[in-house]
Length: 120
Image (cartoon, rainbow, N blue to C red; front, side, top):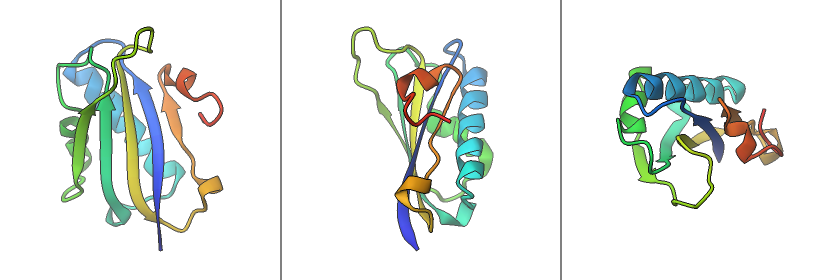
């Protein structure tokens, strides 16, 4: 089975732990479903968040999806002037038989503006 990376992003209405958990879990669930990824096919998930999100770690909120031993890591997004605020980006690494062209990348809650070329 091949290793693939599936991208996505979501924008929060406010820097709030409950909002973050809702947005992150929604995004990951949609990525998993759209790409038919099962939990035992996951390799790791990388999260980045814009500097204005400080209420919680995105990886911590994702743990509510019972990801078990899947390695999760958070990083700070580059602080570019004029960038879309309150955004969490993810890159899911998983075993998949999908081709690069078949990968579905999910952008929600205003984050579609980041990648109109591939946003679902």
